[in-house]
Amino acid sequence: MTTILLVEDDPTIISTLTEFLSSEGFSVLSAVGQESALQTAQSHSIDLVLLDISLADGNGFSVCKALKAEYQMPVIFLTASGDEYSTVTGFDLGADDYIAKPFRPRELLSRIRNILRLTGRSNSVMQLGNVTVDTVKGTAVKNGHDLYLSALEYRLLLLFLTNRGAVMTRTMLLESLWDAAGEFVSDNTLTVYIKRLRDKIEDDPQDPKLIRTVRGMGYKVE
Image (cartoon, rainbow, N blue to C red; front, side, top):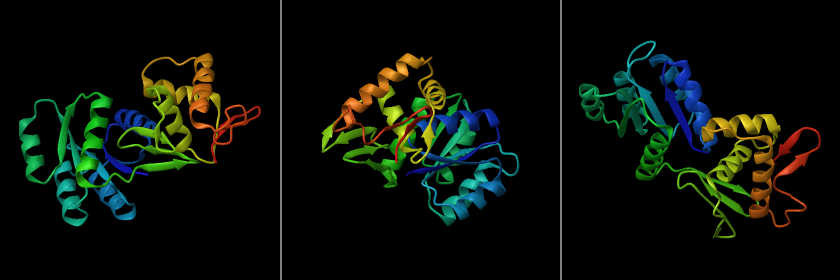
C-alpha cells in the first residue's frame, strides 16, 4: 500500500485529509513539525510527502531539503493561496508539485496520483481473490476485465481492503462513505451498494466469499 506522510500542524486538515486519503486506499502518517516529520521518515517507508510550509517547529523548506537529500522522496507543498515566493522556493529545493490552500480534495488526489506515476512509486496494487485494485490508476478489475465500479462502490471496496481482518460495522461504513463522498449516505443506500458490489466482485453473490457478513456486527474481508 502506498504510504503518504502528511506534515501539517492544523488538526482539522490532518483529520480531514487522513480520512479522505485513507478512503482512497492510501496509508497516511502525520507529523506536526520538522523534528517529528524527519523521525517519521526515518522509521517508515514513505512514498510521498504532503508538506505545509508553516509548522509547529521549523519550516517546510528545511524539511523538504532534508528529505530530498536523504531519501529523494516526492514532495508536494501545501501553500497559502497566491504565495509566489513560497512556490518558487519550494521548486528550487526540489519539490515535485504544489497546491494552494484552500484546495479541493479531488484535485489534491489527482496531483498525488500523477506524481506517484511520474516518480515510479505507485506501489498501489491490492488483491482480493481474483479482483485487482490499483489505487493510483483508480481501477478495479476481475480476471482482467474492468468492473466499472461507481465512485461509491469503489470507495466501499477500498474501505474493506484497507481494513482487512477487521469487522466493519454499518455505522463505520456509513460515516466513512459520508466523509469521502461529501454527501449523506443512508442505511438503505449502504445495503444497495453492498449488494451491487457483491454482484460485481463475487463469483456467487448469493454465497459471498470475499465480503462476508458477520451476524449482528457488520462485514469483514479476510
